Length: 496
Image (cartoon, rainbow, N blue to C red; front, side, top):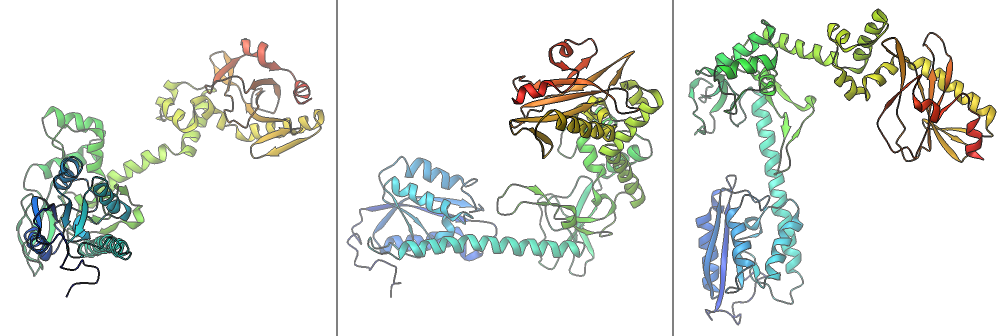
């Protein structure tokens, strides 16, 4: 008895022998035995024989995921070189919707079917059968099957992930190649060691487990050497990498060592015997992304590590001191101390104080000049309030909106108070036009020495000055002649 959605056996094309088709089969490593390609072939060939369809070519992707069309060479070959270029067949036969693909975006599955239809071919899922032309329920059923195929992959992915989490929590290796310097060790059902696993080798008994163990090769010795050089000898990652490269020792990637490859060794908890899982996520062919540390699954003491925990912790303390050094507050505090001790700044003084480079200050604050301005934020804020009060006396209405002012509802003004930066026996004031589209005028407020509030004058930077670069205003600068003002009276002319 046929299913309600199948075409009756008395189709006009049955047993005519002139209907031709190609067939597509797919089997992934996670699929059950009943989905193997030989079994698919038998069922699809039987359907073709019973319906008078001749299969002229077969395409099969062995061990390929159906989440995308990428990585399926047979499917790509069929679509590009047969469906789009040949006209000697009418059907593409596939056992069911899941073999066509388990696309997480079910519209993609429909898109490939639509491409076949556009080329004059029809995709037929043999477990469903060829639909009647006037059957309104067939598209609904196929769409439902696409959803089921996608949902199956989601559920399977979640089950696999939960299983890996459980294995990791128990202190076993959840899968994948081991880190540099470590080998996979097979354990029997009683969790007794059996033998190391070779690359690509898998356990054969389900109840067996896999853990990690220091490698018998020189890799474990290299890992121990890297930690000793970094913690006990005080060598940097770059120095360690250069030494390893000079000796012709290959990195985990089989190439030369770099600062980052050495650092990845030094920050890997597995070298103290800790199993760490779920550091990254890449489910269902989505891009790999880093997980927050609170989602990591850690199991300390899962196996014998290469180094002692105390040595690992010392290495992490070094990294933490570095991170602290580059915190904004610490960078400014160091800069403040250098200035207070010397009354000026110079790269050599910063190096002597072991501060980050001027380039680092530029990345964090825009430039070293603007980092210096941050040391006098209270004074600059006082100057901003003072200028705003003065504007109230020369203009009819001054509104404070966000971090800028609106003058008489006609002109937007960004205030930029700056203290003088020592430069040899002179000084300069660093300025930068506020490049936001809403700002009509940037007003540089030139302050005297930062002992007390004293405004020397103003530099007006209108919007039409098309530059985002900062510049330095010296006492002899032409910018003072062109753009400088002794008071705020000039603003009354701008808003009239």
